[in-house]
Length: 262
Image (cartoon, rainbow, N blue to C red; front, top):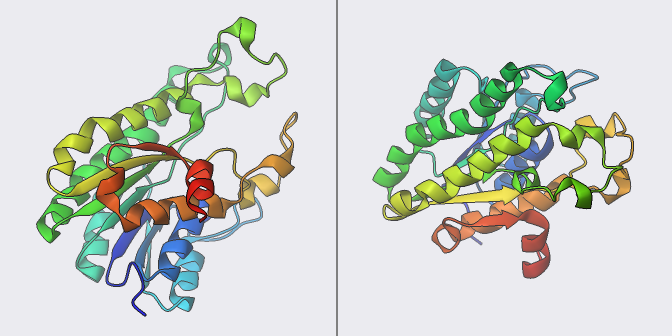
């Protein structure tokens, strides 16, 4: 039986661990070769997982996995990562912009550098990677760009209607601001790229229990309510199977999984 992504190649940022790794393994199970991109060369107690470990797990599934060290804050790294993937695989059919920066400090306790870093990692890097990868997709006849965004992009309720006991980390504005911009990037380029058979989709994972989060607790949060990483991975695989049907959409991962029985 032919696997859905046989002959396809995905470049996934932030895939040494967490949601990015789960996406890499889900796509690999369905036949995709993976360019594993992140900063981590070694696994540590605080940051379990590395690009080498993810690439090895992809290879154990019978697919080709290439570990590429890449820092989304560095333009040169983005360019060299795309070049390395294209040199190794000859193509990139799927780009998953998953890596992100989270400052999380209340505005009166932070500085503007946190906003700059949020935009550089969460908006500028996906923008540049799209520019680097999309021409090859067009030349090959199509592709898909999946931006892993966040429900933090949604405007919160007025203060009088908000939960006064919500966790403090939710009050840092930079992350939500940048993720709203990332969603706007997705919808803003969907028409242009869609005309060339390249789909652009945003997916909101929801509060997700990653390896890193499992090592620490967040006051006021019931960790048992967190989504497993596979929820987002299954949602990404689903939209990649019929890219143009989802072009310009913003999805909540859990809703896709439940609606389609993934």
